[in-house]
Length: 269
Image (cartoon, rainbow, N blue to C red; front, side, top):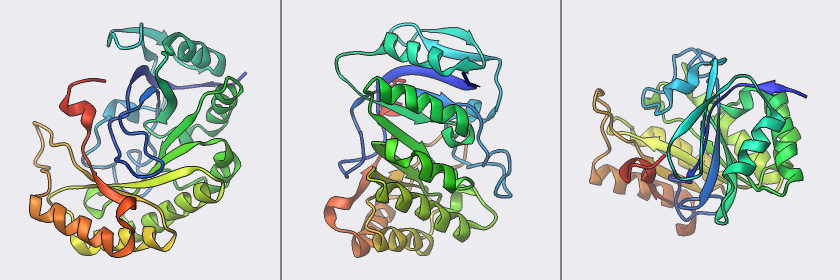
């Protein structure tokens, strides 16, 4: 039985996305936040997205995993890492509620621990759970092809150039589009998400929108959540209209929209 590193496990509602196909926005999920972020570790020549909201998950092998004691209580106990896939399943079963829609595999980066992730997915599917994958890891596309038919819903996080996620940004974007295509071909309900800031340039966003349009993948325009200690700010209303207008050049009106991090604004997990 394989073991892997998890940052936290908790029950909440999906706070990102909009009403496009593939989004689970507003639906109850159990979140499995996998440890380790290859982008933050410099895999693409930089030190991670400048607006990252989960820096604790950068650590690849934390000693402890935080596990919600009871669904919705927002109180946690510590478990020793690494966890087995069976331990993960047992925690999911304990946190299950009648309104549970799916299990969110997020991070960090879940694809960074491929063998462990595959075993976790297998156990979840054997117990009839729906799977929602959030990913931006382009360096193991063969593995993604292997598991894609077990993923029910997915969000591929396509990095805007201002995120500083890669020193070769256009190559990264094209690889992220490949991920979308792999999942779509496998039958996954898939959408792309792009976090935009006041520094996002319309010509960069148009590259992303055009590529999404070429494979007919919904594109969610997500407004960055400002941080108290950061100079990163949300785009203006004029910029938002400009970016959504660009998306509409390449995608139908039911395949694009804006998103904010709902869980941040109503202060839930």
